[in-house]
Image 1: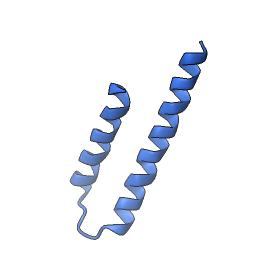
Image 2: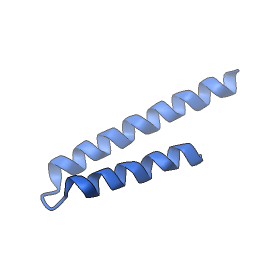
Image 3: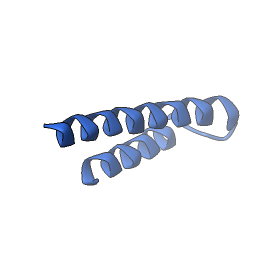
Length: 51
């Protein structure tokens, strides 16, 4: 059970980091499109599922 709690908290931290990075990228990059931003978020989320 401890393993599941650790995995869940790790996934939450990873998700929070993905959201923070997407926000920063959306604010700071002038050439970013919504489609590119969504593709990046999807790729990052897939990495959480794989790990």
